[in-house]
Length: 138
Image 1 (cartoon, rainbow, N blue to C red):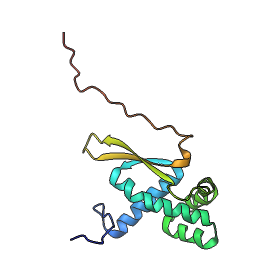
Image 2 (image 1 turned 135 degrees about the horizontal axis):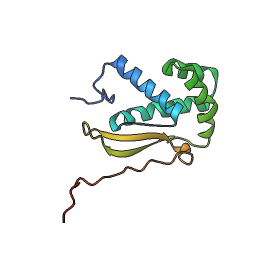
Image 3 (image 1 turned 90 degrees about the vertical axis):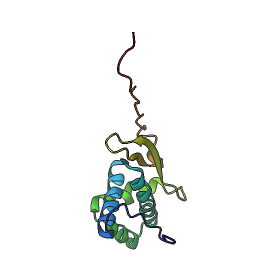
Image 4 (image 1 turned 180 degrees about the vertical axis):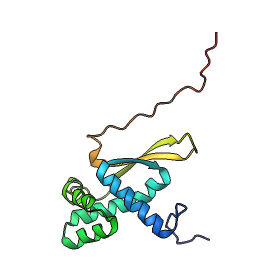
């Protein structure tokens, strides 16, 4: 039974999972929107929101905590200088997950995860649906 076990394992060991999620959060900070599988996006969301909460605190301890988790100095600088001040008026809900459909190769559900405040700057790419019937009937 998996009662009281909230961690999504993603088919990885704990160290591999922690490194994956930290890198996903750093990529989200750097690019403002990343395309990933839906399961990974749902796992990244709480960690990204915790990092923004640390950025909103802005003190030295919060900066060192974020740096210890993320491991990339540039991402921490951008988080504290740009992303956290934009989110200062919000009490939570800093990220949004937009479902994209299934990946063609393995049919994995894909999604964008992006900052809510950054939506005006970067429009969402529309999914192009092509017809499966390539033959024209006469």
